Amino acid sequence: MSLVRLNIKGISYSQTQNGAYALILNEVDGDRKLPIVIGAFEAQSIAIALEKEIRPPRPLTHDLFKNFADRFDIVVKQVIIHKLVDGVFYSSLICERDKIEEIIDARTSDAIALALRFNAPIFTYKNILDKAGIYLKVNPKKEDESEESQDSILVDDLIADEVEASMPKEDYKGKTLTELKKLLDEAVNNEDYEKAARIRDEISKRQ
Image (tube, rainbow, N blue to C red):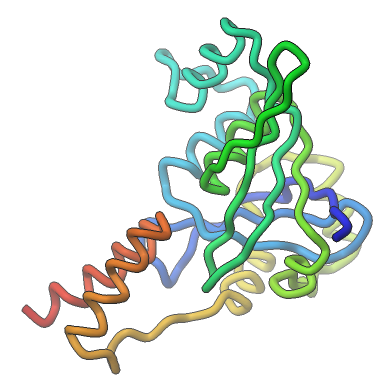
């Protein structure tokens, strides 16, 4: 399977999912975008890494990982988003130490936060981009201006609306409590904590 390189287009706040953000990855040699739902903490960590000029007074978790890796000569060479199951993206960190390569499983949001800190490229497989990639109807002139200026990490309202409309919406109102609890267990097992929070909220409403 062929790999497709991605870069970070921006971060969009989700209007329909409380406390969630959509990280938008852009196909380097194409026009497709890959939106990935991430939590607020991961969004903040990615935003800080993108800004460069923002320096938190104490190391964030991803900064700590980077400092730890530097101390022991571990390098993250690249990140690969290698699997998509039930809307959840799975990623791997390709690491190297003493010329020995290791593959470490990671949540996609964590993997990308680390890729930024190591200046490591981000890839996905073509079949994943074919399945989950979207085309955003953005004014070409506006697109060029935003790429040149890079004034803000948050994408503009037009892109945010397009992403929001393209993301799958899950309706839990028609599920029974038993079904919801099963979905909650699955979400936790898949480490999809944002989805788990939404299911938990629906369960709370009924109790």
